[in-house]
Image 1: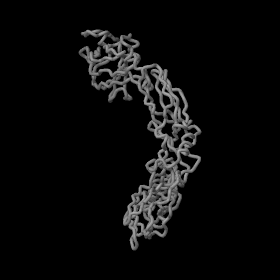
Image 2: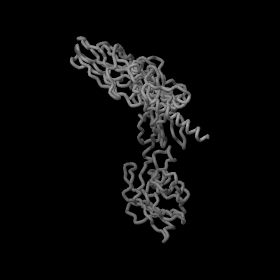
Image 3: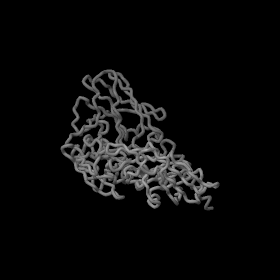
Image 4: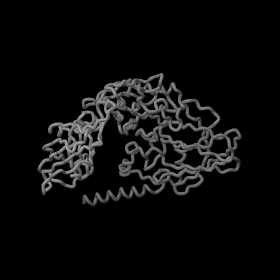
Length: 504
């Protein structure tokens, strides 16, 4: 009996869903209410739902006795398409506007729009709705063309979802989620169409960037001075109309968020705050006073804390909301709740004391093993062409000899079922039981050992799994300057991965 009741309920809900697809029908009962909750736009909105998804074309002609038609193609899931007579629903969210292109728009203001009234739905062909504007364009002094507006508080799709034009995670907000089309031109005469500055949120964005572009120096410390911490700080991106606010307003906006920017340094295995940012009123930029230290990494961060990313003053009809971007993330969408961004780090080092070389993986081979492929000894050869320049004289340096414990701390071997081994979740480390540095077949300028013999765990057996070396800064040239590790000392303790496929 329980099974029968369950099947009956499923059938009932299915029937209601089927009925809802018929134009003009909207069942209202407790079952439908429960079913429809899953389409609640405030819960299920995504970044992809940031526009109504319409395409707009027009046939607008200057002169009397002309039909002026705007054609709007709606997506399949637009709720307006479910109506037998869409015109009533269109009137709730659709409007048409013109403007005077000869009027000067003051900085920070949107174009003043004049609404066209009296339009009607001429006909419908599938998803295409043909709107007759019932308007004659005959002005000899100006015309602007037509702007189509969709009211984001009233337009719905997919059973009641609303669009989130500004992508802040809250759909259907007045002023922020309204959609404005580009200006639809009127043909037949040549007066200026002017520039249309859309009302609403303009997409202002301040981006964390490594504008300091750290390069190696010749000293242990290097004083840089004031460094710009954001890209385009002097010209906030204002939609498709950059620069349409005053410099004073830009300065005010950037000053309000400047204290969220900081520089951190990575030294001795950890990140710590190094300096805070200020807004430089002379440069009109968010900046910090920096100096760099040998083998220290730096990065820009932004921490929102109590900083408001909405302006106190209205611009273009609303208080503007500012995106902070960097490191592949954005602080803006409240549903993602990101409050901290970290820029890409860069390392400063004194190049007379440290340089980074790539290990020649082609010079790796099996020196010996037994008939079962066990008791493996690897041979690593430093090619004669490897050299470094120090104090304007070129000398060839070879392996720095270290004992077994230090070698094992700085040289790891991994294998796994997938490539690369070092990034595979099933990787396992291959043990090392002995290491020997030797000088073989030396050329005249060989100053140290140019070969390393590595004895693996006797139980290890040669196979075709993927292998990786993982080398720290303790392995390098005998000068102690050049190493085979990574500049990214903040990642994996500065070890560098060398993928070897199935080398042994």
